[in-house]
Length: 98
Image 1 (cartoon, rainbow, N blue to C red):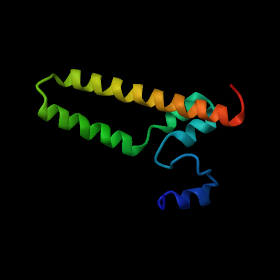
Image 2: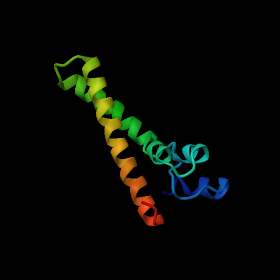
Image 3: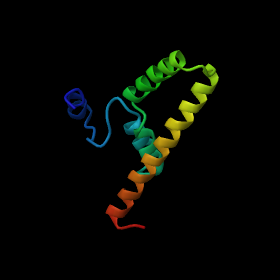
Image 4: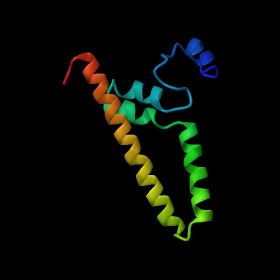
């Protein structure tokens, strides 16, 4: 939060999206759509956790690297789609549109 404050003041960014994520860029490209919420899920922390998880699973698993990468990627993308859909639907309900 404190890391984001200078960027909010300097660039006039809204507090809706993190500086380390793609949410602000997506908000410029797509106006309050599902894609804005989907790309807001991608941040440096999520990418870093994904990479660390891949290395850890590769060490402790007997499965192939390709299987681990594909399974983890599908899981992360599915989770991000579900989270984006929930946030988008809650935004629509807050606006009174169904």
